[in-house]
Length: 233
Image (tube, rainbow, N blue to C red; front, side, top):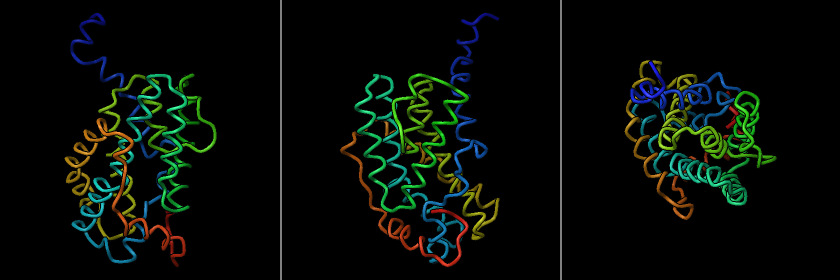
């Protein structure tokens, strides 16, 4: 079978997205398992105590704060790489880092972003991934890599957001308010929300960035002094 026939059957698109399976895997060396994005504090405070409250908490993060903002930032970083606009990319990254409401959440995004970019440069090298030194926000790094390697933006945005959901569900399981089956159900319940937020993020501007997850943001400060901790945020 020739390449034209393979592309007609969708194999070209499937091959293009294969790196996402590695990049968003728990085994990729970014340390995502070490962060809970305030979920550990939410469990300690009793805000997340079962499957329903976990889904509600994560839905708010996706639609009112972290998820929506990350989708916008990822999309703009993607386009900056496409357009070879290093100046715009620096502005986007600076904004993404500045949006972190606490030191722990700054570490969460910057450590994962830098680690992701370094690992990806080692395994999937591209000259288009080199314009940023120092701290890099995680969604910015993902957008950069996807654009550099021609992975479609809509698929990248959905995969990133669903990976975020799965990371936080995994944290919830380790924190013990839910079991593995409930965790799977929680991830499935948020699939539609992930798709909606990703679609919005592709078309929104940087001026549309904002958040209303005040309790989670304040919780990140309380978590810094929490008596027992499994996670770094």
